[in-house]
Image (cartoon, rainbow over all chains, first blue to last red):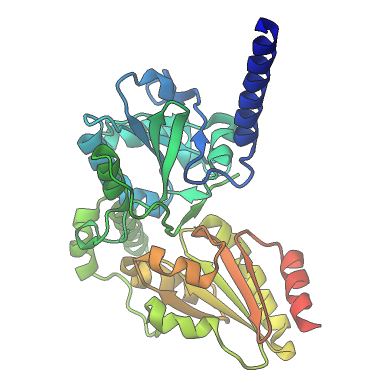
Length: 206
Length: 176
């Protein structure tokens, strides 16, 4: 009897693990809302290595794929900084990741990232996707491209994918603050109304 | 000549600065540095939609680009070459600029004139991109360059960069 229980529980374990791995390998087209996002260990502009797991108190993350050289990304710099100021203390810090190949875009190299962050006074980590391994797993196609994650027992669950808001040209003319609305919903335990949005952006340079 | 060069340099400085400091934009906009007779057609998405649904016998190649988009600029000559070589085969290229409106006069029009672009160029200015990207194509994430090729009975969308050969191969499929 004891043996049967052992075998059954081993089977359950195998099934659970394989279900999890299946889920994890199914990332060809990138994440969909509801998927579990991978953690990473990427170099920050201060030289330290940063992982999502380092943020003990975080309830989730606002992961922004962005860069120095894309005019759309530049247009959103101040708004990304404002998001971090507003939500880091509420448990949802901004994690910016620069996904471009710096041989193609030297203006996005490590020194340029450091200079830009200093000039703009970024208070969030600005990480280099060295080797360009992380952005394809997320399925980011452009800068800026946002993934809002929520910490769950399963891991960091993707809750929102897309744009920051509905007006890249003029922050004061924005009608829908997609990211803020989504994070506010997570904080207050409500459903996110718009889970996926699209915006024009610069293709990630490979 | 020296003074002229210097002023060009100054303009260059200004235009660099303006991408970075948004607050100073209005000031710069009031001192337009280029005056041109080029008549740029600007559309919001509602006005633009007709260019995606023309039902005559032509093959339309609609390329979404911007002057600041390096891979777009790289492939632009191929679209120009296509427009020229295939005009007698009823193929028409439409270049849809997604440049920022503040740069129409400063960058887009000067670029069109400098490169002597022969294809029709229009500007699409509709900041609420989430409302229209899927109407161009269900699969478009919003990254540029992107290209739509369509005829009366066929339609294909490409979120990628083209070589001239690739572009020709795709267009040929619409001609048979």
